Image (cartoon, rainbow, N blue to C red; front, side, top):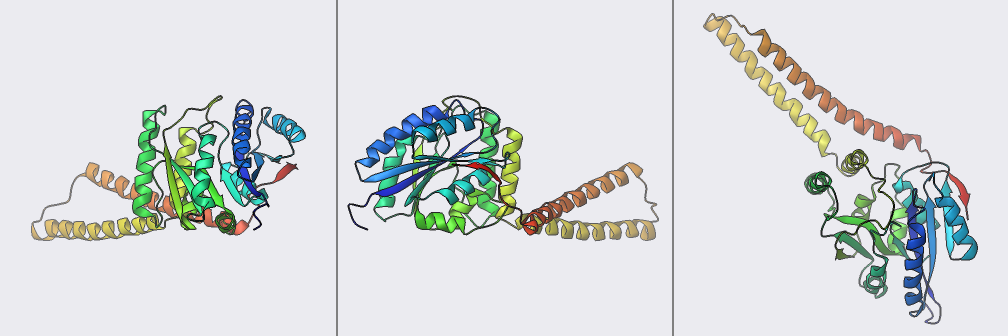
Length: 315
């Protein structure tokens, strides 16, 4: 590429009810782009309004009117952050792409430093992880750590503890992600699955600059379950192992009952214990059936091949 030809970096920002944070983010991001401009790198913003019900769309429209670097997509309803990330990556045109949130928890000031190892060609991606969880509810932090440990044990990919969706990628990396067309998307798993050379940047947790988080404990729990199922079939194996164990256990108990009745002449008694055993075994059966049903529902979603999102406005 000619040295005089400027490179382009795209900022992909999913938004859901972020009317308070977008102006703050935009101001900080523009300062970073001015710094990058000195290195012959231009920038563009790709905002994705994920069905916001506040003034997010109105603010994005105002920004795009006064700044031709600002582009946005508005979904017809809330489709999830995963869909918004996918839409933003598809619309991005940059040689390099940054995915980050507008809430201030992804420090925009880190971008120039993240760009250096990718720009040099030594790495394909610069990823970030939080080394602390200060400010988070203790119960949320506890289950987050448990999730990463489970993923490390049962999946075939390495999901780094504290990893964020705040990443800077070259175009080859981005195109590899876009080549995965699955409906049940889990970006924290997709990023390491595609491979390539990744340099990690660590930083301490920062609070939102304004507004409230949209991620409740229940939403995070469901998201973690989706992630486990998207990148591991071991829960199915666990269900099979449990079934085999209880089959062997039932044979042993049958033998014990026969011996007590025929050899010792001891009638089998104990309705309470029988009911407890039945309830326990039934619970295990329902649990394993639930695992099978969850995987079946994911397959059903994939087979329907519905679009990941529907765009109401594109500008």
